Length: 347
Image (cartoon, rainbow, N blue to C red):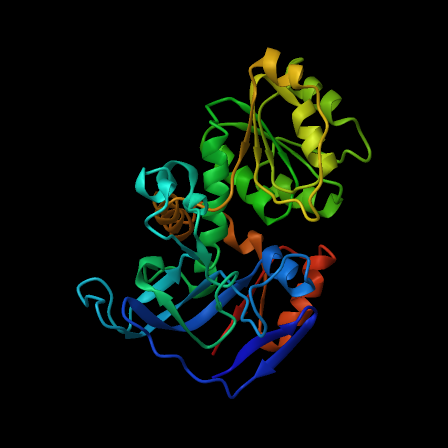
């Protein structure tokens, strides 16, 4: 089979002589039809985030067709020919958070011993991949494979939006107008919120307008808090979602919280940093700072419905369909903030 193998940081090799794996007990073999390109892949590609081994197969947003089922997989559940999308978090089932039900409130990423398809175990930038059956979700016939790969990042966004406790007519500030931030616009609007989005790239702010943002702000050109106050009758934001990490955006988010506000950190920060703030700002305003990573099983299933039922602007959010031979260039495009989500299509 064909596949893209990361030999070491910044060195990707395309191969056409890889062995097709056999599914073990409790696994299915998937003929991969599409696999999304995520900034997390690029962090692994560049070595900014470590991998467990080399060579390694990246790609954690995969969809395809079940080619074969392993032992102990009931054909009443999955069978050859089923169209599926792959969740990527393999939970251990025996840590405290797995046992006490926390995962369905916090997210599957709260498992203490998690493995992640395409992040800690080989992923989907290959023609065939084996995955535990617990990661597999059926998709309806009207959902294309390239749209299905958006389900996982949408589910991560949905988890963050739900943690922000957004209510009707809340004013929500989203910092960062990449894929995650733009998706959060539409999810917040579905909850009846008014949405402000901040980014330093004007082209992305134009996309944000097309997706329903009520106001866009480039903080390089205007004061973010002043813009919020003018828009929101002298009040700051009820909820803030930082879809990008870093000292500056997080500091901006803390400073933009209204009394009782909620700040969700949806984007990771690489390299790690520290953020200084006066704890009295949180104490006296009774605000919350909440981390969000991964998704819940319920949120993943709901995200399939959102994408399949055209509740999100997938044609806007997914900027380009590419072949496997263009994968390395796609990584560099992500590094240079060119386009939004790209997706590798397999024959």
